[in-house]
Image 1 (cartoon, rainbow, N blue to C red):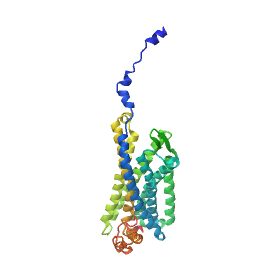
Image 2: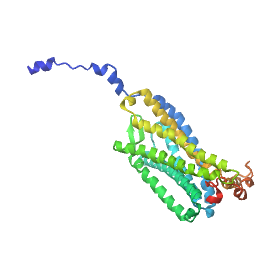
Image 3: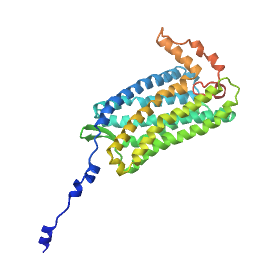
Image 4: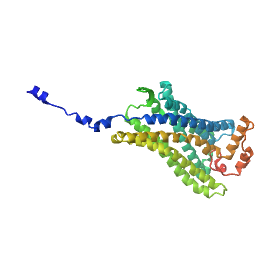
Length: 354
C-alpha cells in the first residue's frame, strides 16, 4: 500500500520555472558597473591622489619649516593635513584594484590599506571637529580658554584623536581580508556577523557625518552673530567662509553616507531588483569618489585662505622653483595679516585666536 502511494505521488516543480522564483534568485549582471568603475575610479582616484598630496604636502612642509612658531591651531592643522595624506596614499592601491579587477598586493597590504583608509578618514573628521570647537571656545570664551591653549594641550589632543581614530578603524583591519572569488583575489570587508556591518554603518553615518555636522552647525551658528558685531571690514568674508565649510562638508559627504545607509536597509525585494541594485551600487561608486575629493579642499578651506599662511607658501614655492610666476609675497606678508580679521592658519580672527 505504501509503495503504491509512493509511486503515485507526484511533485509539482512548475513553480520553480514560472519565472518568479527563478528571477528572484538569479544573479544580477554587474558587467556595466565593473566597466564603468575601471575607467571612472582610477581616473578620479588618481586625480584626488595628486591634488591631495600637493595641497596637504604643502601644508605639512610650511608648518614644519615654521615649527618654532607652532601653536595649538597649527598642531590641529598639521594633523588634519597628515590625516588627509594617510587617507589619499591608499587611493593608488584601490585605483589599481578597480582597473585590473583583482587584488595583487597580498593580505597584509589589504588590511593595511583598509586600516589606513579608515584611520585617515576618521582622524580627518575628528580634527575638523576639534578645530571647530577650538574656534568656538576662543570666540565665545576668549579669556577663559587662553591659558589652556598650550602646546601640551595640542599634543594631548593629537594623541587622543589618533588613538580614537585607530580604535574606531580596528574592525576594518581585523575583518578586511583577501578572498578567492571567481574573477580572482578580492580585498573585501568580511565581518563575522551582521552586527559588525551595523557597526560600520553606525560609525560612517553617526561619527563620520551626523555628529561632526551638528557640532559645526551649533558652534558656527552661535559664532556668526558675534562675528557680525565685530568692527571688521572682512567680517562678511569670514561668515561666508564659515558657511562654506559647513555646506562643503555636507554636500561632499552626505550623499555617500545616505547611499551606504540605503544599501544597508535594502529589503530582499529591492535586492532582487537588478535595476535598483545596479543604480544603488552606481550611486555608491560615484558619491564615494565625490566624498574623497573633500580632502583636496581641506588645505584651501583651512590653510590657504589665510594671508599669513599663503605668504609662507608663496615664499617657499619661490625658493623651490626660481622664476615661477606667482603673486608677490608682500601681498601676503605678516604685516598685512595684522590688518585683516580673516582666518589665518585656520583661525577665525587672528587677534582672538592667535
